[in-house]
Image 1 (cartoon, rainbow, N blue to C red):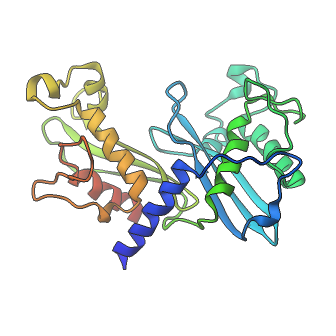
Image 2: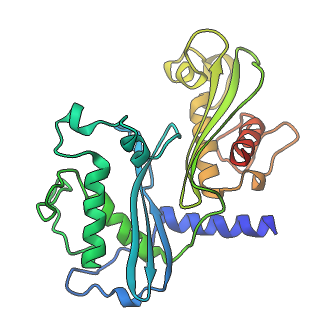
Length: 279
């Protein structure tokens, strides 16, 4: 049963990430009545290299109307979603960026517009991804409306298998100077961000940072095909596709052959993911 559920989740997540063919709808010909009742969901393909965020949209259609919409973000480092970070006072777009309102407040205006117009094409967006149609909104909104379109094109997918929130687990002991930790973000029941890293026994440079800076040197010193942080990123991405850590097959040595390009052991990563989600 678990294997069958995992296969279904893989197919659903493939749709969420890749999307369907490009829509030809416009503000004038968009017809919401063609969409089934249910929960729709879509994420951006990648985390922004500049900000570390990727956007996520969840919406619900009932009786031919959009009755709920949530525009949120997940960070490459896992942890709290963007709205939570902002509401906790840790994003501070007003104080540090001179914005007229915080990000979540402007996002809520965009959401309210969609609930009012029932049409993701009703807002005119300029080449910078912004719009003059929404009073009080100066952030880019192109990602939001594009993800609404993508979610609708994907079709209803429902909720994922997990509770929403932040999930964390770490090893009890250090091994070779590090102990592994995972930080997950779940939105609409789906794992949308996973950060796997090694916490240092001494100092404050994590295993990822050491690998990125070239001081870990797994390629140069160990003859690996790529550095540790690059292979860890492949494992993280594969988890986002599969969703279920127990569905990833491991060799006796803890390697997952299905993760192309990764020869490092990932058994500890998957065990920590399962532990975090069960906490």
